[in-house]
Image (cartoon, rainbow, N blue to C red; front, top):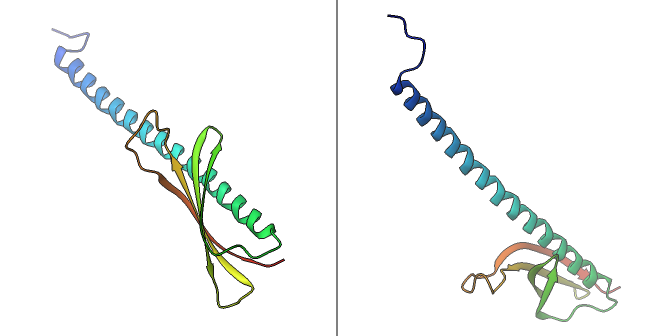
Length: 127
């Protein structure tokens, strides 16, 4: 007798293989989406750090020694910019360490700590 179709076992094996491939692709898509979100956060954080450095370097006087903190809302995201100003061997220069933290929306995640998305170390002098 000649068979003109697939057996139930062959169909079940094919469906199982398809399900495994679909689950694998689904998890890879999720990982890609999470990576893209982190890259966007880091790019925005690097821009904020660079802007903070430029604004500090445009000032005519040397920046004051110590640590400052600034909360910024940019593109619907909450950011915290921490700037640490230190002395250098040259009296007319200061070392700036700028850390940018992404602060999650507190309404949705009350226990989540800020995530450091960027750090920029640069130098500023008197103009």
